[in-house]
Length: 472
Image (cartoon, rainbow, N blue to C red; front, side, top):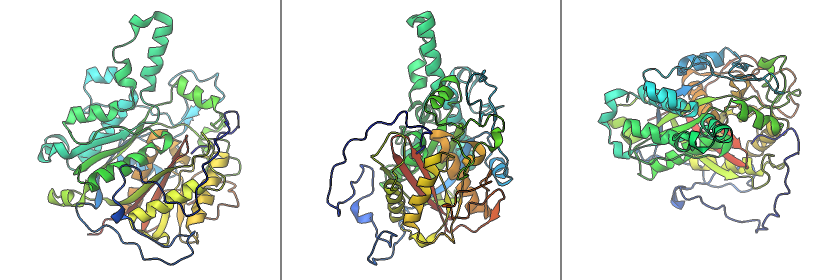
């Protein structure tokens, strides 16, 4: 969750309901049955309990077989990760529109995007960029999963679904529709205004295009969206409702109303004189996050389904968790309880002990309160920080809002595959409380045992997912 740089939007939170200290956590509707829950040794536990056990049923083990993206570094997964490893910043001055009157005039703006070969000319002209990014990333993920083109006909499309979320939806289409209403009247509103603005249409159009008839919807939990989608998609597979899910996030909010909205929240950096150093998670001189855009999508399958079709397995999804701070619209809880308990539940769902985790892709947005709140929450779960490396993808590509977790999950899988962690750039004067190895400014070789990826969103939405190398 991104903390604002001002308390101008602060509302008095409702009085929390007082519950007994030994209360049970509520189960969300798509969680796995109670018999699947496991116990582990938590940093907050005083008793030693049974060691965690990972899933062994090939129908319920979830593996990653494909990845696709649209990013400020292009649409190729390998090229994207090479840019991250080199420590290159994708942040620059905005030239898509005249931003000269805004107090923030830069972002992770995508340039030179092409949907050729993935979207026909008519839809290329009509669709909001948010939808285009979703479709291109989704189809590229299928190609990398060896399911491009006619190969997709080899699977049961009735059990293949799409769950690609977005925090903002078709913001350009929405903005233009409102402007037409005000300036020209209701008759000049496009008939595509509603369909292309709503958040579920990316998943719907991808499914319509490909004939995928399995679970299909979107989740919109602000900047936690992608991880929520991975978690829900995996549970569809584990419950037997799908053999395969295309899941992730998409966002295209670098337009005047999007930039202006976050400026009004006082959430953005104003380092206009040096945009490439503006996103500096954990640095004492950080002054807000930097807007980014794009899409990040994974193909998730049951191990049984992937093995039957000889799929290229690149990693395993071990588990995840979602919860809510129940505290404030934009500010994190000072005690870190929401985030720390979300991490603990993720590890429990994954069958992983805290000692097995040695890499964290942090939410780390470069906000004053949010960065340290996350670090403090992590420390509640992990007793020792010496063996854990933590990095910040957003230091290079900015904060891609609903797509952030998708693009960061791809970075995590590539770290697992390559044995190299990308740096957290712009680490000039780090906070003393950050006593982790943040991979400052230079990539590092690191064999990842278990990785977790954190994403938090306005509204107090917390989400954590865990990945590892696939081992039969």
